[in-house]
Image (cartoon, rainbow, N blue to C red; front, side, top):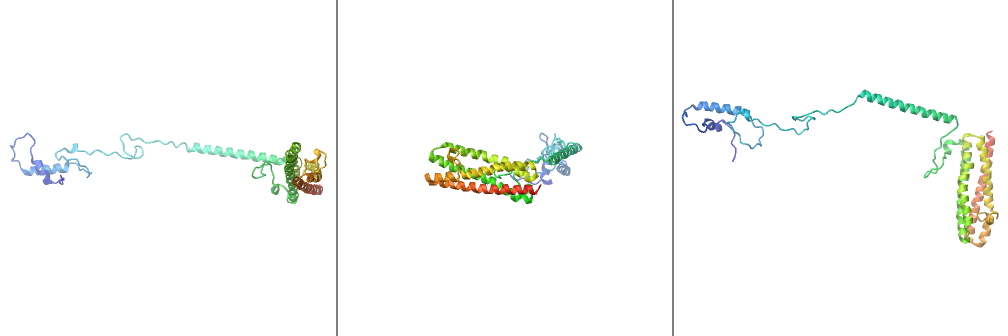
Length: 306
């Protein structure tokens, strides 16, 4: 059933009807008064602004009883929405002056700490104490080594040669361990292998502590004491390299070191082991020559700076 628009003609018959229970007496009232009453009733009713509302409109209802209920806002209360029990949310912002004072105190504390660190570094530099950071080798740093930045330019070449002699000693001891291991397997003598292990374990760190690090510090600080320590222990190093290159039959018939004498003896027994020993003899010989050259150059450098 379609709804008809609300007009004056549609409401006119309703307005002229009598209430239920009244008699038909007095039906001769004037129709003009009924039209006026219906027009006033239409314009006094509240308008329904929602076209989708399907409720029936009662034109005879009073204007005060036809109030449209207010819709609830989708915005939460306190954030601009409308609600009966709306309340504002208080966000504590804090005292900006207090935060400023805290930041200033932190800044002053940092400046004070920086001054303390700088004062300690200056005192250590005046005392000749330097902080050494481990940076070599790069894949697993165990020592501090920076020739390019810490050694004078005119002494860097000599320091690099001393460093090469230290690395050469480690290479000689490692090769000696391998050759003696092969010889101990062929001869079933484990004692010579254990001595070769002792050479590697003790020779590598002791050579760095006793003569290479003193030379490094002597080149950097030009200290007489450290130069003297280098000369003493580097002379021992040169003597050991010459002894290992010869390998006289003193300890276990000399088979713990890959020298020339034991290489000739082993070559007659086993060619493969003899070749390994001869290669070790070449390494120890080259190491002895480099060490003698470094010792001579460092001595000339030391005498030229006195």
